[in-house]
Length: 114
Image 1: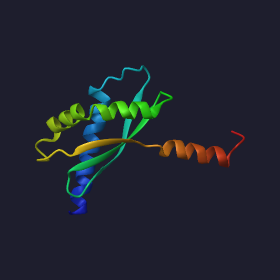
Image 2: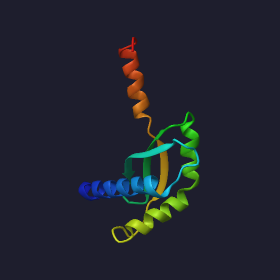
Image 3: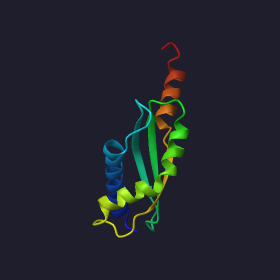
């Protein structure tokens, strides 16, 4: 598939999923913030890996598992938003984006006095 089209689809899904998490999903834990950092759709548009950054809780994996448990509802909300741009809505798989934790670890190793 054309990489420009795939990039456009990734950006569209990132924008819409970010908006869903920000406006429609109310977290059960006060202070919890979920951010969509990256979306990778397969070339046949059947699956999408969505990377989430979770702030405000110590057990991030549990939050991502809870989000994965609600993929049907999230896919439905996404489908209602992008139904005019895409004929088939990909299956969603949510993964934890630990890049910020990795950067923080590298920074603490480089600057141990801070």
